[in-house]
Image 1: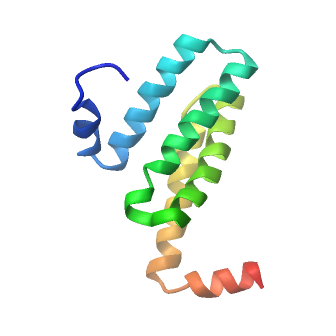
Image 2: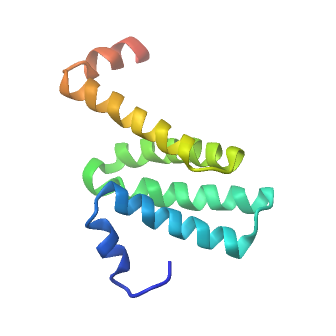
Length: 117
């Protein structure tokens, strides 16, 4: 990403929206640099998914990184397939809202037992 060294810090002050903006700018820069070939899109999805996962480490630890890496690959794949950002954004918001509902209503453990038992 171009700009002063504290650009990322300023974007992070805006929370999740800042992280999305940072990844969008970085992804767009990679797209301009590498082109839109299948191989380039694959590399861009891998790199931005890794950054997306690392952005979750501070708050969620290693389990958050693991989960976010898979989510990032899926959302990045959707973006690479559709060539537009709105669908991955809607899927991400829906996923987060479902997670918040499960956690704050106390349904997380029951859902985990249902899925993983």
